[in-house]
Length: 105
Image (cartoon, rainbow, N blue to C red):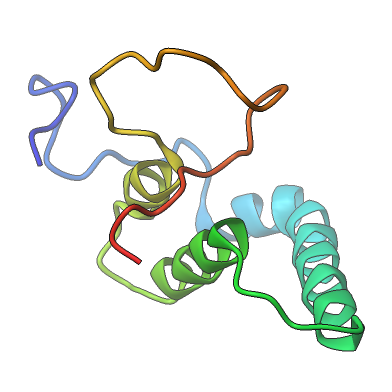
């Protein structure tokens, strides 16, 4: 994929050190991980297990988080974005679902 900012260095750096970044953001992201784990546990405990494109997208995103090549944010945005280019005739849902329905499933 093309870089959005071609004039930037190959690998941008964070102005904070590794330790400063961890100290500042660890607890916030720890809480977010616990929220995701709680959500998945609730799904596991639900009365029925149904296939849902939103959960499938979330699980794909979790796999991306485990990669070490960088670019995770862009990859996750691509998973969660609707890439269709044709307008729809009628919006049947109220509001966004947060992930596109998979047409190839």
